[in-house]
Length: 352
Image 1 (cartoon, rainbow, N blue to C red):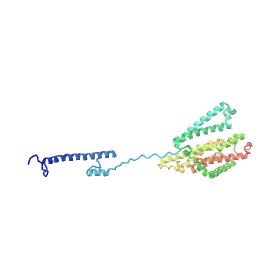
Image 2: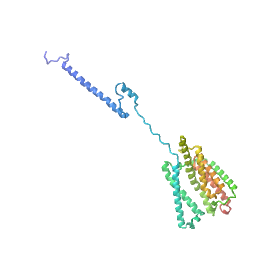
Image 3: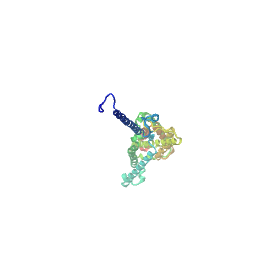
Image 4: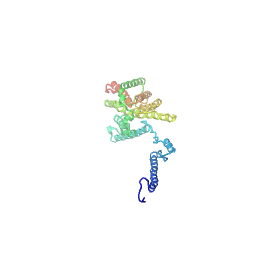
């Protein structure tokens, strides 16, 4: 047979050699392709875990064990957020005192201007002491300046409205209005008892302001509306809760106790000891502010402390500054109403 002829039943040696030589090349390429896969898997594993190491998709017992041991997702502990701030606290009280100082400055400037222009014929400081317009006008300036600054600035720190921050809660006061009226009546009866026991004491300076019917009616209005509103915000809206929070904070730090959580309205809760201890200095300061009006006598001074303690109890029990304000206003209303009746509608002021 010729060398050029090809027999299909007998494979050619050249052909076989081509296959034999070509197969290893193909296999090598295949191995190289598969060899690249673990590298990709390893890169993917490193991307998700952030840690180098053998791929869980690799072969061998060590790779399988490492895949089982190492978690697919790593969790990182988030820092515990600080507990919400108890409002108001000592920092807020210090800011309120700064506002009060600015209010006193405005009050002094206004009185100085009045003296310079001889407003209502007043030319010296001695005349101001018993001049109703100057006394109530300057006090109103103090209240309004302090309140205006507090109303607009404190919400920037609290992230809530001013009345929400001081725990006003007007609805709670309205819901218990009948009870609050009874409490105010009890305070009034206590005042009548103290007056009966101290009737021989000296004349109260506040009575000198009731010189004319118009002055008496002005005092009536001021004592029932503005005075209770601003005084309760200062004493039982700021001072009382600040002292209670400070006492609990000291106890928590010294004893290592956990702080009480905020209530459902976001207001702080205090221990019984903190509330009792905070009410005492609040009431003492409240009485000292008013003692000059009563002639610095013991009976009225003790009465003021007792009434203030009752107001503190109402505010703490109902968790409402509006409640103590309502009691305060009703108490003053009953006091002035007695004077109104006793003088025939402020027509016979000599009977006071």
